[in-house]
Image (cartoon, rainbow, N blue to C red):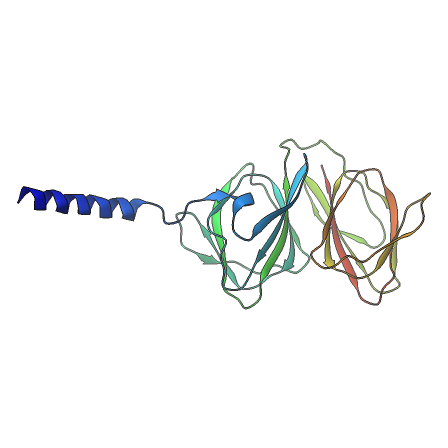
Length: 229
């Protein structure tokens, strides 16, 4: 009788322990499913976030200030750890959003419920202090879409044959290709350089370069460029 009671108590305690244990452990965002660290230096880490239809990221922690540049949105839900999943409002393709995760870290999971994939390029800022760099200004062709104490972000859209006058990159940053094609960059003192970036490509850009860009192809090109602060 004593052995039966002991076994029953053990099973009961084991059941309680299993019920209380988290079903999915959280990981840093750099280790989350479908979040691929694709570039890193002492200033930024760039994550290529591509979640196919019907898949989810699992719970992961954001703790660094981040800029997300959207390539493809779809129906999806977000679930903060300890809360119910909620539908996430869609964002426009080519939009950029900033989240101050350094001040308010977040543990959540993303699940794609739509038929299309979710594709986001996330630039994490590896340094904590603002004011380290002074972002520049840009003229004709560039539309400023985000500006705060950490980053300044522009969109550049060029139809075939269109060009944007020369700008000088005042602070280091990242270029994200929304719509690719063929472009030519002109840098004073150097031969023109042709490039054929594709949607979803991204590139590190050092400070100090002066460049003009021209759409040399037959399709529309759209770029999002950010400079650090």
